[in-house]
Length: 333
Ligand code: ATP
Image (cartoon, rainbow, N blue to C red; front, side):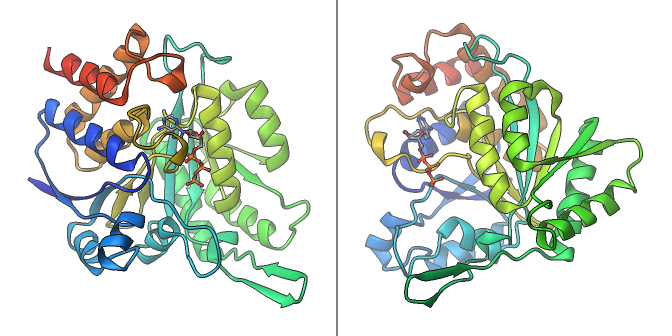
């Protein structure tokens, strides 16, 4: 039996996290949840955004499911998400983006995987005022992290029978930093001749994705471009409520949806829990409970295809709970 740290999160986090627990229960999954919150609720209860007990739990269990956590805007608050990724060195952020049969979106054949570097770039948090009226933010790109994410992307492509890796960059302008990233990815690409390799500049990538998304397979990107392109790609298949994600390190993984805490719909039973449920399916793949993972994906795809219980973001009227029940019912059939 695997013990998994469960961080419900802020905003819609508790609602979508309960959906995850229910769906995994209905799928008969053998997991013991260790529930410890981080974020604003944790701050109110313990005075810490990331309580010591949470860090200990993740360090011990090495697997966590995390609902979205709000980072307070303003000086002095480092993003909790970024802090966890850096602390546990979960250097690869993997986000599969796939069309849902039956959903009315402009594209039907999207099937790509975003592999985003997760530990450096402009997320290093090195910002300061140079002088009054002048702020500086430092972009860090290292050979070590770029080779590591390149290796992850190509190995992922190989393991998952993918055909092509596209490196996304802006090395025409940031010749040294993005130039180093690209140079590292090229070096890795040379070791995988069976996988096609191409490079696309990030602005062109955005245009290509909204015109010909079916042309892309695995994308490998530095941290900031990866964040932006992920939301764009989510939009191609029906929005942020649908796209799952995993933060993976060498012997540790934290699973979370691409979306944030959506404060505008929090507490209203309106959130779409699909992204979190599919993130949990990725968790099950990771702990080798592949049959349960596949059953859950099948249930989600079927309920969405049937179209009777769609949440509001997908044009339906179902509540979070009603949709979750429909997925659980499908699993119990
Ligand atoms: P963050 O900065 O924390 O990543 P964000 O800026 O990406 O957050 P979100 O909190 O993800 O913002 O929300 C963006 C929009 O998408 C909001 O209008 C929100 O209601 C909607 N949204 C996000 N997640 C969901 C969901 N699971 N179900 C329905 N709508 C969602």
